Amino acid sequence: MNTKRLSAKVEKALSDQMNKEIHASHIFLSYGIWADDKGYQGIANFLYRHSQEERNHSIKFMEYILNRGGKPKVAAIPAPPADPKTLTECFDGVFKHEVDNTTAIYKIVDLAMEEKDWATWNFMQWFVQEQIEEETLAQNLIDKLKIAGGDRATDESLFTLDRAMQSEPNDVPLAQEATGSNP
Image (tube, rainbow, N blue to C red; front, side, top):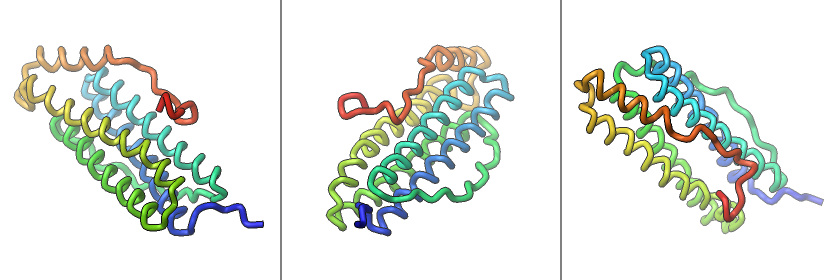
């Protein structure tokens, strides 16, 4: 008996997104290393946490594919982009990545609707909501840096920004612990 509950097209789209989330994890890890090397330990800590969150998202996709009788395909992960030259470039890169990821999420939602795969459509709603939060977070980074003075910010204002990001909570919830009431 065939117990696979995903079409080949949906399974591939979900696997591709799983790999996209891993790539995002590498991008944020790379940005975190850059920030750490520049002396921005608070910003680095934020980016390291964000890297772990993206990895958790990939695991969420992996588990869903497996639970629906599919087999996720792990692909080669492209190298992260070159190091940013400024904090503005770094934060703009975070925002650009999140917008790109939102577009990919929406394509899977569209595919699930087209195929009337309501289980996958429902599963993807968590990610739709998550991307609202991710884009807002990235926009807030850009706004905070602008308030601090952008690339012309004083050392004192950058120090304050870095310290504020250092004090953010350090716990990243694991994807497998997410529930309907605690996404």
